Amino acid sequence: MEGTAVRGRLTWQTATVSQLVDETATVRTIDLQVPDWAGHQAGQHLDIRLTADDGYRAERSYSIASAPGEPVAITVERLEDGEVSPYLTEDLRQGDQLELRGPIGLYFTWEPARDTSPLLLLAGGSGVVPLRAILRYRERTGSTTPARLLYSARSLPDVIYHDELDHYNQDRGVDVIYTLTRQQPPGWTGRTGRVTAAMLTDIAWPASQNPLAFVCGPTSFVEAVANALVGLGYPPGRVKTERFGATGAPGGP
Amino acid sequence: MSPPFSRGFHRRHQTPAGEEGRVPPGQYVTQDFPVLSAGPTPHTPTEKWTFSIKKGSDTERSWTWDEMSALPHENVTADIHCVTRWSKLGTHWQAVSIDTLLAQVQHDAGFVLAFCDGGYTTNLPLPDVTNGQAWVAFGYDGAPLPPEHGGPARLLVPHLYFWKSAKWVRGLELLDHDEPGFWETYGYNMYGDPWKEQRYAGD
Image 1 (cartoon, rainbow over the protein chains, first blue to last red):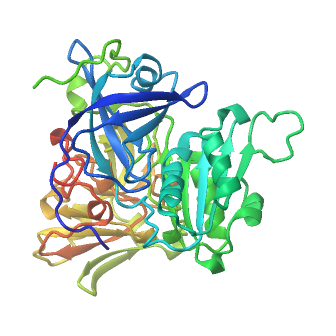
Image 2: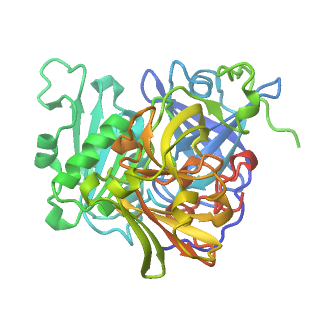
């Protein structure tokens, strides 16, 4: 395994909000200026720390939404019973400052020079965020690695990065397949319902092509998808997962 | 330097009254039991399951599921702390103490590397897995441990961040030196003390 070298401590730094983009009714992308950002890999995450005026602090992990080489961005979904996400999606303004540290996590990462196998990306809801970083990186590097994204969303208006993903689909040879679980627009001819083993049998690259799968979403989604891929002959080591539970925290072990 | 204050941000998660001292810095209490792991959940049937203590390539001692089940079990109540910031207070486990297992092996190890189905490993100093601080857990809340939570058996080392409580554990390798395991190789802390917020390498 790589990465055994001792790395320095990840220090907290002050970042400034440079832009806010509403992706859906409940999801916002936050572009950040980070003066001493050391760079990141596609798929990594970072920690945000907020301090209230009474000194109360809260930290959360968020997947990095931007590609390596781009300014840091995160995409945050508002959780109604959350503590940090309502602030980040509703109260934060351009020019505001907050603390962050990162990048974190060296396993759930994609590097085109290293990972040349067909890429299978499986997103449940806001689990698309680190997978979008991977697709942006594929775009930036001009990689021609075959890539396929299956994205499970509640409805079409809940699809994050819709225009960008359609661009990858139309112009960059990425197969982008949506499955809408709760509501479909009139005349929808695409897939519906949760991702099933049968759906994956249609969509997943055959195991014989030695594909590399990245699965990110809620636990029930990741469990079902990862189990189905193993059932299709994917070696467990070729299925990288990132899960978030009911607490909405993405990320680590 | 004082941190930037976030206007309009305020505490929403209250720590249950009287339990503030049980929640390490940077953690919040959850009633859920979130699941986090790097790959698919292994499903090892108990008739194929063994737990081994190894030294190098030698197996010093190995237990089948039935042999392990016959060892004295303890009911362990513990607060657990995940590096992703949730803490869960007062969890109940049914488990065999690592002391019970190591008592059947001659050794002078300083560290162990726990190994698991799925290829996971995690490193622990020997003093952290002895003296009633670590267990192999088979039951949670009186029921068999579900696979997504590490069943049939996981390590339970509640005084360290919960990734050290390796899921799907199959044994311990005795070592005379510290060696990073899976998450430790991918950027997480070698020791993982939640009270010192040792989340990542170098913390």
